[in-house]
Image 1 (cartoon, rainbow, N blue to C red):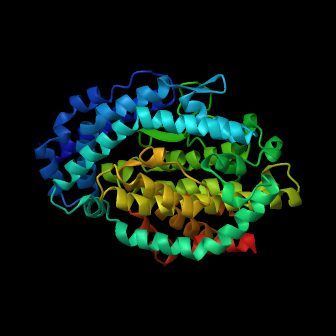
Image 2 (image 1 turned 30 degrees about the vertical axis):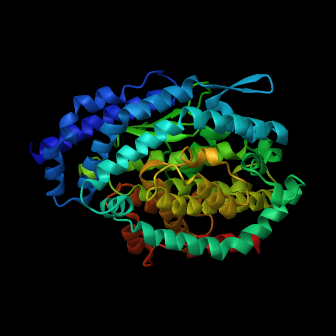
Image 3 (image 1 turned 90 degrees about the vertical axis):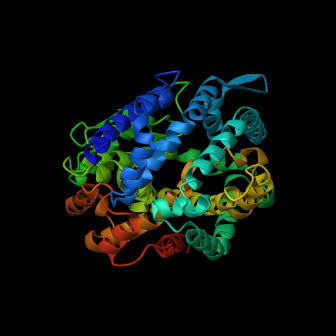
Length: 485
């Protein structure tokens, strides 16, 4: 096999996988065919491909071939999980609730007892139906990756990705310490206002409702999302569909995944944005997040190398997704693009900021937990999951979720680096184009230029080149402190 053939076949395989993930995740197809696709391209997971990638001098290509080997090996487990999720139904208080609809019920149910019952039913069903599948998947992946001789699983993923995971875990721990008092104070204020219960009684199922901000729903009508996104991006001189390359799927389907996603089928020519609406501001934030991904993929220069268009550090595309979704947390943006008054906008921004800090702290704890998980037997750490997530967020988590709440391959690290990158890019754009850069065509040109490079640079290199400073949590903390003052 020659390198050119590896790249050409690799791109076609990614296109087929992308379409399969879109069709299945969007609920348009019941039976995924991941194994069949990997079988057609089994040579890309072979030893010859691995050694060719290892000797190519491209860290991104080597990491990708390892990912292909992993993907082919765990495809059967991934298929079983998708089928189980689409077919499972929960029995709660005499109601039959599709498993995939549980997160929507949690966000929209004012009855605290009902929320808790739904979440317990979700967690117990998942523990019975999915945890064995997940454990098998993670064990197989760990064994395959460590067989490369790069160290234990944590060290191996760090070597492949270029991310110092243990060091990022230490930084995450420091972030939790630095923001602890600020978070506890803000959370107490929000819980008192929103729920009127002691913060010590909070459970995981309370979180979606607490941060739901439902009384502002009228300002975030479902039928305005796409048009408003088009209007706002046009003020920046940007086409939100990037010449029709971005396709939007926002219809409700029972078998659609509850977690919104973006999947490229051809980069930059065909990208799908999938949203399952829940109602209110969260739909807007989620849509803008996936729009950041979609515009990033669809804006990549068509003549970029395969690795820059398809591979690289996903902290970068997550950074652009967060750059867009954080616009919906900005008071000026809310006042400009929604009918909310200034006092109402300020109240909403406070609630959203508490939710933002909750998420960042949750992912900081997830990374620390996963560092322990992958150095364990994948069974005995359930109490550690509950302990660490509960301590970081102030909400009582469930042991049953100790594997269900894990994204493969330390993706939590990509999210944390994306938070850092987004805060640095937003500060840079504000300094160059003022606070309302989100309606400035000059800022649009700057962002378009960055997106056009795809993922040619990892997040830490991009941050240094654009802002002159290394990645870190300081800009994230400083922005939140300004809101909570």
